[in-house]
Image (cartoon, rainbow, N blue to C red; front, top):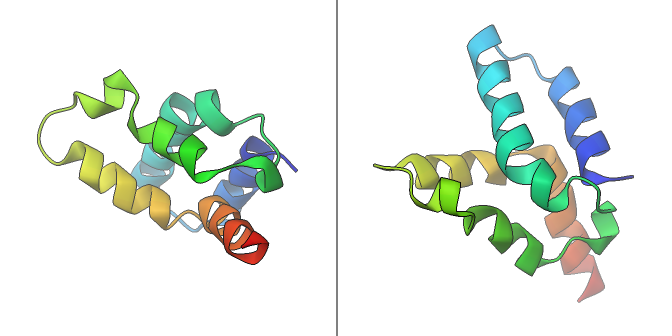
Length: 90
């Protein structure tokens, strides 16, 4: 299963209010899918995750946007699944 498929399924299961759902969907579409969307969950590495946050359009945002985005992404079930796969492989 690819990250994008997993993330879209996860998002559909969430009981978010409309604005939170939109924010999460846009964050995934703008920042995560272009980097890891087509990768199988088992193939995603820490370097791939780092690349999400090294994108210039995210890195250059003002204020604490990048920190808030990072914290939010770390709570996404699809990324937690990726982290668990990395731990199991070690």
